[in-house]
Image 1 (cartoon, rainbow, N blue to C red):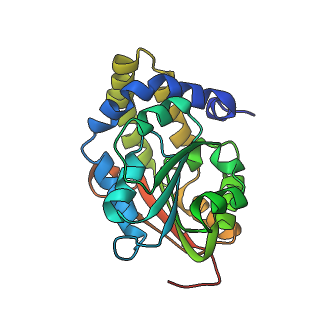
Image 2: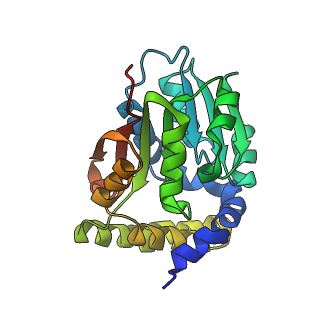
Length: 248
């Protein structure tokens, strides 16, 4: 049986993000922990120094919030930021960025690792994917792309919602969506479909242990996860892993 969230992933999600792009920064800015949590997940990658010589892939960059978190942590790194939504990319590109940041429109799970290496000057030292894997039709294809795009020993951080392992987390998530996210989304964008999808997609997505197992099945090692404090505990997580065969 195909769920509403699965049908949305098959085509409507990108259109929804295109429609919401102009208001998206105001929406996430109303959540005081949103940008802070992205920066925390980037720090958990343990990228050295200011990123001199590092090649980073930012998948599902949206309006550039994840890109900004990377730039703040490693301002000298080269960053290739990718998103499927033209509207979100238009907003991202309108912001000031250092010279090492490039934006491209593409579906993350369909990227060719050779295409990535050509634009970064080599395989990625690290991949950051915020709120992405839950939104792609084939999470395993995305993880395979990530693993293939990393250099040996390269690191990945998935910043994602996951509530399936906890009844309490599902209840809090539903309360936050019904009471805040869906009404705010409707008010700012004139539509609620994308935000109802957000609510349902998180409820239907992998639990934290299931996603960790997906990462291991894709060939990643040293898989670990960490959550965040406050109402996000057990809801928002950083999932970490690395490609075998190398070191930093």
